[in-house]
Image (cartoon, rainbow, N blue to C red; front, side, top):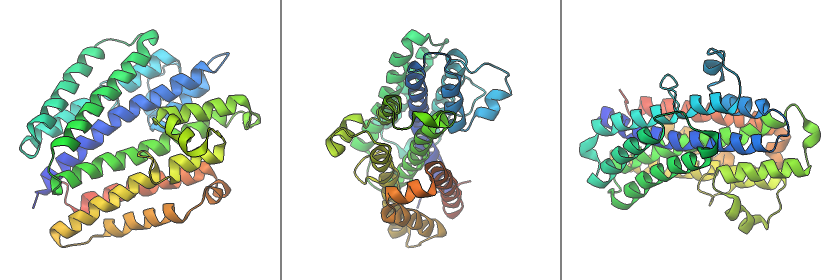
Length: 313
């Protein structure tokens, strides 16, 4: 049986790797939405900071909501615990603590990603180079994920790592989708317009789902279709339903391994049952923003309970 401290290290190493990638995806979303504006893009960048959960910390700096300031804060700022560089630093520290639980390929990919991103993010990112930088972040984290899935034994080490990845991914997907709410809040007249359709396409692109969405919905970019795909589709690897199906699987394997079920198992199952029984019509009737806010709260509560149940200290 893994010590709680080792399980904690595995869980958080993978959460922070996923968070680094997803922070890049949030920046990519804001950047693409900002490009659709003919005037200032303040609302778009404010929506990104709100959805990332770091707006209060950014406001304390008294800096403008422009591309340069927001991008620097989200990608490079050492005082922002959710910046890409800080996430990779923390992931590497956790990886080093659980080095003996990782294959050589996984540890080397984590270390190499950290070195590559330190080099890339060593100075402020020019806006013209931003797409390349964001692609580089996603590529480096994908290499870690590939090494992990290709070389790790499917035991409790794998299960705790999987929990960290999927808990973080579910959180991020909900936040990326919630950006759409904050962007449209000042101008509900845009709903149903060409501009609205372009923004939904941007949301899909930010979760690497634009092409697969076209396969499933034949390119009908309605709010209901896009939200259904990102929230409820069980085969889309970044959807909320897919993430929580994987979370329940990982917790189920841990229950078999240790012979004990905990409060977190029932909480996860309740969340998955809600996602599987809901329709997109139900969600829109409740309110997309309200649904996502409640999901984020429940997801955070589940994370806290997992830490208690498996003694992450």
